[in-house]
Image (cartoon, rainbow, N blue to C red; front, side, top):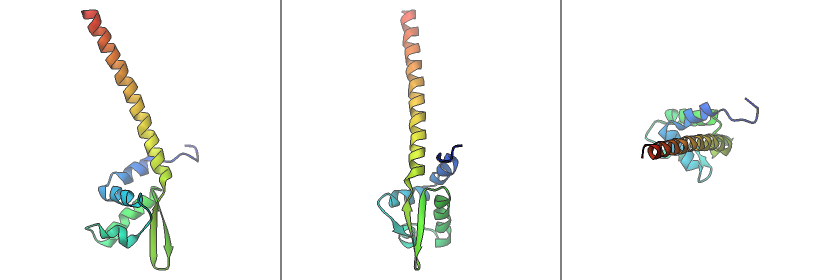
Length: 112
């Protein structure tokens, strides 16, 4: 894999969890402190921190500690890579389905 390419497996693994997707959605509005991100969660802080670690390990978020406050922000590059992969897959399947539709219409016309 080229150096500038994002590994998608950790990105999709991280996005598979609803808590992590909620964090991503919240960070899309701007940076937030750990306590602010955890406030909407119904889990203990150590469990929530594991979710933040998974997001950071996947490269989806970056954190910075200033004093006693750790602030997280979205890292969009992996999300853009996942979006491109999904768009490529969609285009591939649309072409395949269009070809199938054409084939079935031709088949139907031959039978008529």
